[in-house]
Structures are given as C-alpha cells and as structure tokens.
Image (cartoon, rainbow, N blue to C red; front, side, top):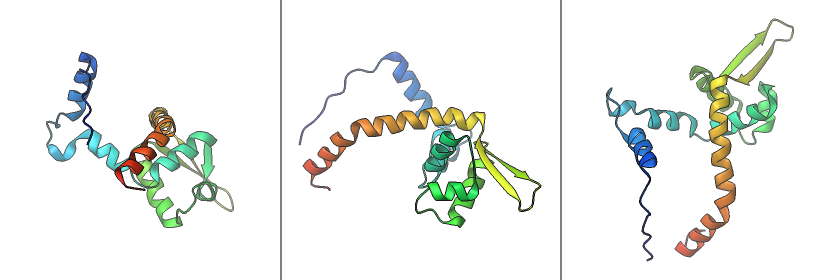
Length: 139
C-alpha cells in the first residue's frame, strides 16, 4: 500500500474547511453542508439542475425526455424538492391545455456554477480514478 503525505494547507483553506465541518449551533442534524448535499446529491437533482441550466426553461415532458431513466413520479418529487429549496421556479400558464414551465432561480444558477465545476473536475479526473479502481481490483 502506498501512503500519500499531504502538503500543509494554506490558512484560508484550513479556515474554509473548519467553517464547513463545524457542527451547527442548532444541533448535529442541521449541518448545512450535509443538509444541502443530501438534497441535491440524490440520483436526479443534479441532472435536473444541469438540464434546466442549459435550456433556460423547460416543460415537464421536455425535462423527462432529457433525463434518461427518470420516471414521471421521480421527476415530480425532484422538481417539488428543488422548488421547496428555492432552486427552481414553477410557472403555470392558464391555457388549454395547461402549460407549466420550470426554470432555475438566481439561487439555482449560483449552484449551477458549483455543479459545473464539479463536473469539470470529474471529467478531467475520470481516467485517473478508473485507473486507481483497476489497481485496487475494483472495476
């Protein structure tokens, strides 16, 4: 087994990590990082955010076509959760047939930037991670 020695962290990185990892004064169940990651780290939320970020606004069935494998029920649950958290808006138009569109809010757009950065990191490092998994015997 190879052991990696980490370089000393800069003061700003250490302070940022301390801020993130400090348990909320409201109790351990209310850690903001854990709470948000639990919400957006599910199977469908990030894909929904990415597709809404690419298209400005989408109707329900358009989203469902873009997100391969998602059921109607799961898309409904995901959209409601994202709306509850203020990350998307739902606009219903009084038309026949009814038309409903979803779009990212300013808060959702600010999250989109972080999601894109994570996606860029994952894309850049996927070969190294795949190689590490092969070396570890996991494929």
